[in-house]
Length: 337
Image 1: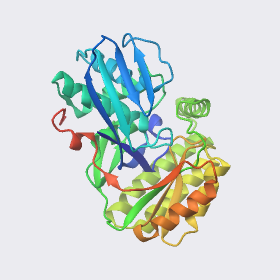
Image 2 (image 1 turned 90 degrees about the vertical axis):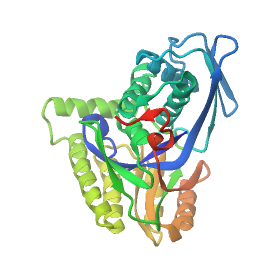
Image 3 (image 1 turned 90 degrees about the horizontal axis):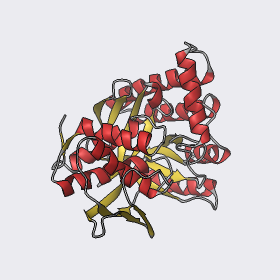
């Protein structure tokens, strides 16, 4: 079972080697697996069924790309995976900016490792998960999602240095402060044209030493906000952390230009609720979700305000709490290292 990921501060910086503060959340994906009876690779999830004759099939832009890509990545890491059948159950919604793809890949890998009687180190599993999504499924993601999904401490956060691919655990100092997420219904753009364009431009700006472009400024200033968020967590300062989250949204809106009218409306609605410290879009943008930091007592009011602002296309709103990553949940197959 693998959790989703929620970025607190540090969006659109992982592929540029920036730093991110994020948590794993208590919405999860479970994968059950057994050996196949017909020699084919099969996957079943939420009424969908897909099959492949081999792990080398071309990506089909369906759930099988992640599941069979996870198996192919294990094979590429030297673990022989027999034909199998999986069944996926989830409380983590798809395509809303909470790393459902990385969670599915990591949960599949853990289930397959158990099926094969093998173990894998944290660092090797993270590398294999990134290989599965980026290289095999063809989604141009950075290392953030698998690092958080695997490494997150129970009831804590992580500072992720994406350049070094190193994670530093942080405490979540509150029992009475939670995250509220609202999925607007605008489909999340992970791997889409907008995300690819932003990533390409950021890489180009840094390659030619342009630190003054709006995109480069966002990366630099957002990484600095992540460092400030670490201080806020250590100082037990939810007000400051919320302020940094709101600043992050403004930068994503004005410099990165990845927000939308729907996301802005939900952020504004959340910010007006008493007990809310700050709010921002979460994920790649161009649709997706908004996350707000608030007092637990304000959670229901915050979620109601966000739902009303999102309108009839809204997919739902959830209260989230920091949760343990895969390594803490599955220590029999994910080892230290």
